[in-house]
Length: 383
Image 1: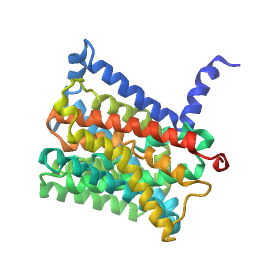
Image 2 (image 1 turned 45 degrees about the vertical axis):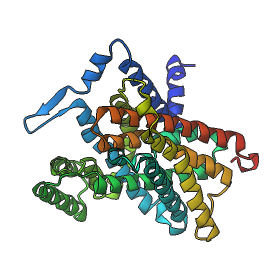
Image 3 (image 1 turned 135 degrees about the vertical axis):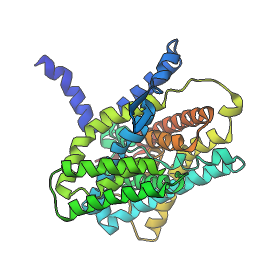
Image 4 (image 1 turned 90 degrees about the horizontal axis):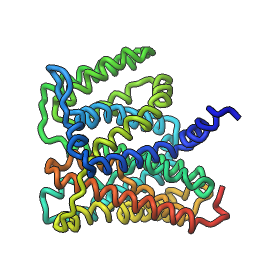
């Protein structure tokens, strides 16, 4: 056998199954936490605060990742939402009802749990949306590790649920995490939206003509006070179907194998300092319990209501036990939760504790979800 194939085939199999994206996020997080608490910690932490840019836009590397590269991630989410609404599970009303109900419950219950633990702290309450998020790449990567114990219908359900969850996160970010609005900048951004609309309306098929106004839209959204990642979602809505499909395929690997691991490296650079007053607090309880308990409870309860009212049905070939395990996997907030935490808190100490709580909650959700699906899934449901 060719030596090259021996080395590359396992990596290709991991990539094709979706496992590689999750593994890269884990490796990036472990590496970043290790470096942040090593003898080289000061040098490593300072890297992310080096400022680069131009006269009209000068930001730290951390901000370029969170405001720039993550706009590409949200652009990909926008393409996925558009595809699902046109051709996927969300295109058929009967199939869409269950993941829509589940996603709504999966956002409502974590927010309620977070509120219960943090109602007395105005500062902490700003992060109410942190446990409402689901990391689509990570959760699907973990689900793929289970092989045939996770029927394809369950993977489709989790994908649709996570996409609706992402849409909810986009609405939350645009609505609740915009502090100061510069209307003149929004007006300039609107002109670029009109340009994208006209390009779509006249069926322009050259991608470069969409990239230029999309960059203009991103810049003026950034300057308006609205988070610039919203520009990625808006721009995606105007990309013609045939171009959108090719773009989605071409962007999957760079986003999952470069942008998200880089985001994890930059945003989990956390010095571990044990402070009981912060570690054992309403903030940590709200995030961890929101992810580990709130997510599955909301997903299962709202799915059960939908099935009992006969407006939806379980995914074909699955059981309530398997749906429960999937609900737990939806509690893997990771990338999206960390992203929202960065919008919620300016105090570095509070932000670090929230990130550590996200890592703890996401890890527990992954382990519990895998345990339920592996040990409690009945063989007759295995596909």
